[in-house]
Length: 224
Image (cartoon, rainbow, N blue to C red; front, side, top):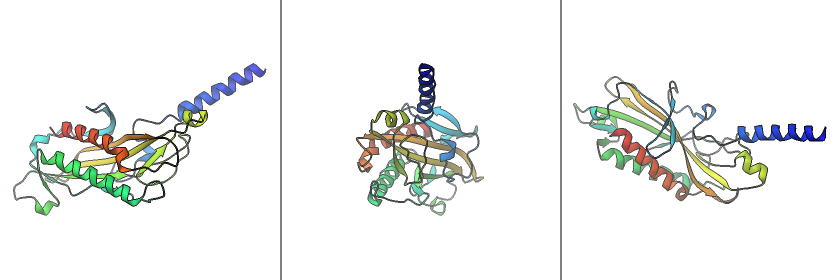
């Protein structure tokens, strides 16, 4: 009886641990509402080896445009800095990602900050992008509304007492063709930063720079 009970308990714990594993992509309940809709998103593998949820119109042709309207990545919803992630860290990440995106776009397109700044007759895209809300959990199952960067401990780590934490950054973006105001591509992406040694270690912009650089590589491949 005791053996059977132990086996049942072990099986139950195994199920909980597996269900608590950190997903490689943004889960549906983590979508922020930044995009008008999340229809038809499909999981894809990116050139850098990452994973994203993406939809691309059959008519998408990055060579059909010469101008992109893009000012900066937004922080959406409004961030809530705390003792682990202060406002300066959020600003540093926002600025680093914005500069990376502008540099990548600038290799192929004229980049302007507003639609009115696009030259007459230009073939223009609008790019909307944001660092979006995320969640933090010690067991992969309890959700907390926090700032756009969070540390997560998987269920296996929590159960074994291992307190290393994975940092995660969530991004949502879309391209809009100004000719007909239709979305031609959209993506929801989660990337992993450096692993932290404990749950009290502060999160910094430096923890995500390598991950953001990989995003830039994938972005460059997408528009070429």
